[in-house]
Length: 189
Image (cartoon, rainbow, N blue to C red; front, top):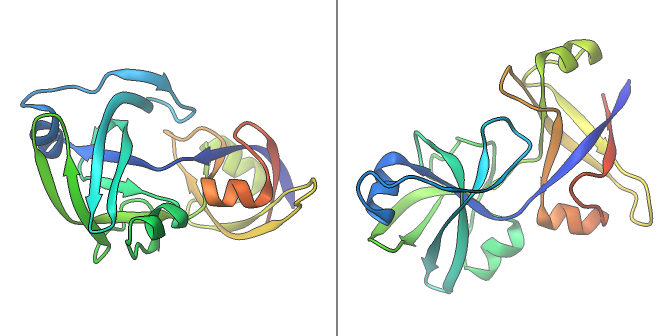
């Protein structure tokens, strides 16, 4: 079976915990919305921090809202540029992942782990998942058309009440298939 869905290409970014937000931006500081994103309640903030490794520095935009943990999501190209051996993981699976120093306007955080290459995944509402006979935790394939037509395997299904129908890949994958956010792709299962 198959169905079309919008593509979301995700650039490098950072999710912060309350404690790390306080350290980097000041006690009680809040994220301010630069632009809303497709997933309900989530947004790109105006706030940015600098990630520092032995290979240099890289700016990261903070996505909101705050989370229970701090997590950095990079493309493989970003990780290699920064000398980081980051694992491909599902969001929140941070055990034994890479670390760095984060520098904000009010302080810095030594992150022992938390840097991942986000595994490709698809967000589905429960109604869409049920309609197509897939469930949270299943895997599907992403099929594209065009000059660089490709099939990306192992796309994790994330279905919950808080999800908006959209498949997420990183900038390396988007560049490889020559597609951008908002374009329709095919999910096969």
